Image 1 (cartoon, rainbow, N blue to C red):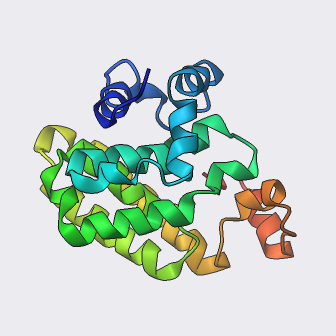
Image 2 (spheres, rainbow, N blue to C red; image 1 turned 120 degrees about the vertical axis):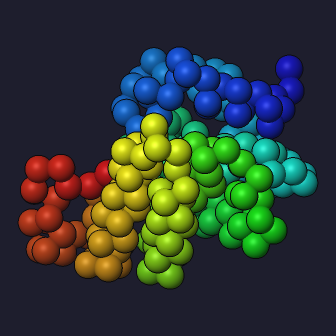
Length: 191
């Protein structure tokens, strides 16, 4: 059975699944693998690029390229293997204004590919987008969106300091500097 963009969005934004977004949960990862693993591979191969014809399809493709790999390939270099593609897709949609067609909570996942970038300019753009999003968030979810903004700022600070995310070094086979080793030894370091 072929997966649609709406299938991706319905799954990801289902109230049952939102508590698992930023947590390591092997059962949740297995559900994603079973239902969307083949679609992630298709997205990596560019076979779903047509989804960008609509703002909701654009977002679903970003989730396949940026979020699902982090679930499917934990502690594996493939977690970040489509990041550059996700960033290009994100920037393209942002230029078209696709993000402004989405509900606030969905816009978070349109901006995360930039927050995940090991690139100064993309990090700055991420923070700017999250600042606007946080300012526009409805009062009843203001704290949640302030949290998203805080995380964007924390990601930017790591890139400003190191030029990369040190918590990826071991998985990617990169040597850590003494400063990165000291940073990683701190409670709560990494993402």
